Every structure is written in C-alpha cells, then in structure tokens.
Image (cartoon, rainbow, N blue to C red; front, side):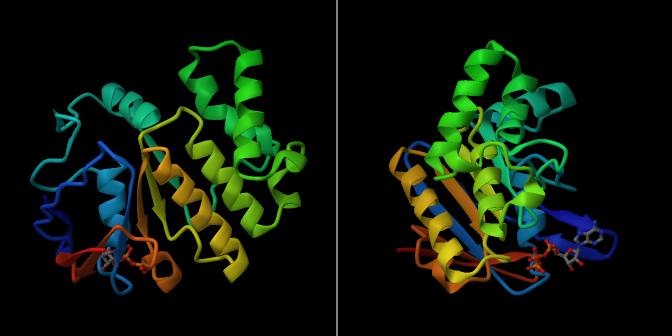
Length: 216
Ligand SMILES: Nc1ncnc2c1ncn2[C@@H]1O[C@H](COP(=O)(O)OP(=O)(O)OP(=O)(O)O)[C@@H](O)[C@H]1O
C-alpha cells in the first residue's frame, strides 16, 4: 500500500505482515519525514491508503466507516507522543472513555476496570489527578492505560517516549514488555535507541519505503 500527499510519497509500496498471533514488539525507525507516523496512522486505521490495501485479521479495506471505527475501538489501542488526554477528565475518567463508548458493561464494572488499569501502569495513587496535575511520564502511562481499556490485541505507539526522560522512558518500555508477555503486539515508531533495543523486529523506513527488516 502507498500514501501520497499531492507530490509527496509519504509511504511508498509498503508490504509487510505484522503478525498478531503472539506477543511481539515491532519498532519502526527512520529519519524525520521518512513516513513513520503516516504508516502508523494507516495501520491504525486513522488514515486510508491512496492505493493498495490494509488487511487486519482477514478484513480488507474497511468500506463502511462505522465498521472501521468499531474495529479500531475494539482491536487497536493508540498511544501518541503528546498523550492526547482529555484535560477536563481525571486520570481514571480518561481511561473510562473508550469503555463507555463501547458500552457493553455497566458503569461500576467500567470504574473497577479503569482502576485496575491505573494499577497496572503504577498510578493507582493518581486516580483523581487531572492531566495538568501529572508529570509527562505519568500522563503517558495514563494514555497507555487508556489504550488498553478495551483489551485490544494491538497497541500502536507513535514516538511515545520522545518527551520523556530516561527513567520514564524505561517505565514505558517495561510496560510494553509486560504487554508483550501477555501476548499483545506493540508497534512503536521511535528515534530512541533505548526503544530499538526492545524490538523483536526492527523496521527501517527511508523516504517512505521500508528498506530494512531485522529480526532480533
Ligand atoms: N497531512 C499531510 N499533508 C501533506 N504532507 C504530509 C502530511 N503528513 C505527512 N506529510 C509528509 O509525508 C512525509 C512523511 O511524514 P511522516 O510524518 O509520516 O514522517 P515521520 O517519519 O513520522 O517523521 P517524524 O519522525 O518527524 O515524526 C513527510 O515528507 C511529510 O512532510
């Protein structure tokens, strides 16, 4: 598949199978502008390819937006460099949002699950904090907990540690490693060598093309 923005070929003939049947960390590296974010947005169904198809679990080209958004909600957790938390909501409320949208559980169960997820990322003492009362590392851990809310098999993270110091980066990487052990697939775009070290598969992008795949 490819994605073009007018004359810019952001992702060029990308052809690779991310396997989701067992826990694994895929890391995508490449210079600024090489197409990493565009690729993650395509895999995460936030964006559509200009040509070619994306096939996830046998579903090809989501024609109906409603199906696409439901699939994304249930199957994919997205983590952003800038956290993208809702500033009007407390930490645990941010985590509740995806579960409320899915709405197949009662409020009490959703609250309990949100607290469990906060515990999983080591933030049980920050449940009532608003995003502006959290450090960058804490915000990112809330964002990861939110991405896990509907228990998706696939977590996509775009430069999740770019704004974090080494210690907080390590905490995020430990969480990703735990997720991998639980059988989740994590696809991360990152400039950080510390992140590359956690890769089971390291993909290199250059000018929109996949130029190297290394199995660690
Ligand atoms: N919405 C857009 N409209 C036009 N061009 C775009 C758009 N989004 C991305 N591009 C272009 O596509 C190319 C790939 O961008 P992309 O953001 O995917 O790179 P990246 O590898 O994630 O970079 P970075 O490491 O700086 O985040 C760049 O040349 C960029 O200018």
